Length: 41
Image 1 (cartoon, helix red, strand yellow):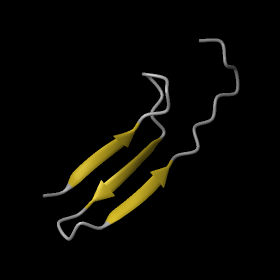
Image 2 (image 1 turned 90 degrees about the vertical axis):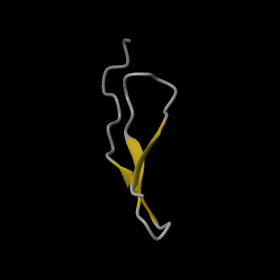
Image 3 (image 1 turned 180 degrees about the horizontal axis):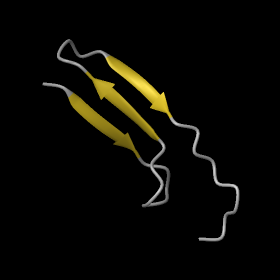
């Protein structure tokens, strides 16, 4: 079964890393590079 696994960053609304897992148990790590410019949350 394919899966999308979200990796938490410590902030509930900003998930910028995830892995894609295929049926052969291989993973691809994706980092979208969504760093905050103005950290006033």
